[in-house]
Image (cartoon, rainbow over all chains, first blue to last red):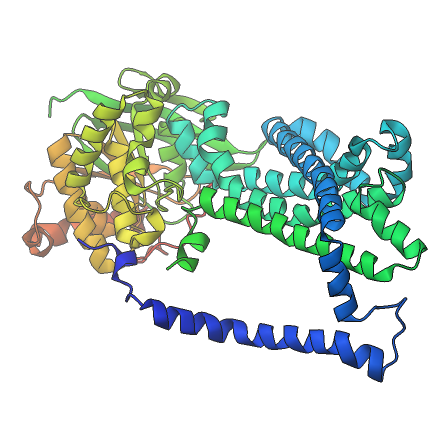
Length: 275
Length: 272
């Protein structure tokens, strides 16, 4: 007996590499054109000034010569973002569990959660500095964490409550406790929803940490350095720092996506991609 | 028949909402051990509701359901029920084997005992070799067989089936009908089976309870005296056609004019 999944024709690695190349080619061409525009078209043809956007090669040479400072600042800010992300996501998941378990509590609290989400969180950045200390990474983690909280809470809650009625009837027929129903049905059902939010909020956490830095903090922080270097007209350094922040953001997202694929290896969407 | 009673329903009624729709009224029904009783009736006659009340998934407004000599609630807490729905309701994150083992895990069976039973069950539903696959890698008919294996894995006293083959094509349905009868004989189970296919009800059952549209009542009980085991020839025997005709006439007499034979079920609207 062969499994349907095993009957798919096996491609040779060469064919697969060829297909990959064709898939990525258009994106690579756009990337190349973007670099050309940045290096020559914008400064030479359109006369974009250095303080608006320094030449690509200048940013790259700073990116290389200042790599020690840049990456250590990046690491510093990444720790703020990661801390905030972990705190925010954990709190949101717990909150969603409580709301899904005790619905009346949910209907009492959700309006306030929605209202709280309408508050522009970054507006609190100067105030959290007062609450937790200007130099403390905690003040940045709080901003990052609060930014992450709502998307994760909403997605986790939707996942926990989007179980088929028949699924719950089945658990009832097994005389399953609420706790068992959560463990065996609701939580596994919610995981694909949860991971969508966990991936998206990596970016929010980086934004929260950097914006938190802008309002003051340790000179080791990436956000502080971006702001300070603009102040002394070292635009190349600021742009290089932005690139560092972007690369960290991409790596952060990618790491969570990898964990997602490992945890959700059973999920049809993951399986079909990895034929 | 001198067998003991597994299900005994008396004066059962169900009203949905406050002063709302009467779904079931004056239901009396006895199911004997080893019996295969079908509930047949038009969509919305409350047959799925009745099945859910027997399984203590929903509560009746009045009346009594005794299962294995105890109230339905006690029977549910004692895990006397195996349930198969129209949708297979399998968990994507579990393999076929682990889906079958779900009730066993909840009953606290140890790993070795579970593995033995999984093997037995895969054999019973003829899915040996598929245990490591995930549900979405199987066809609809295979998924439903996994669901049946799961329901039978812990040898419940009573199997409740809610249009289990309603979403399958005709050929798969006939094949699974045959398999279900074989499983029923091999496991000596007692089955209550909801359907709106007249031929399916007659082919499978020892008794067919005919229900009227809202409020749902049992208007007739037809004893199916076709010989066991039932085979392909059963479907072509004159007695089979007589019984099909009798059930159809009973259905019409109960006001179910809209019943069309061999309806491949749409969504069960009474699935509250």
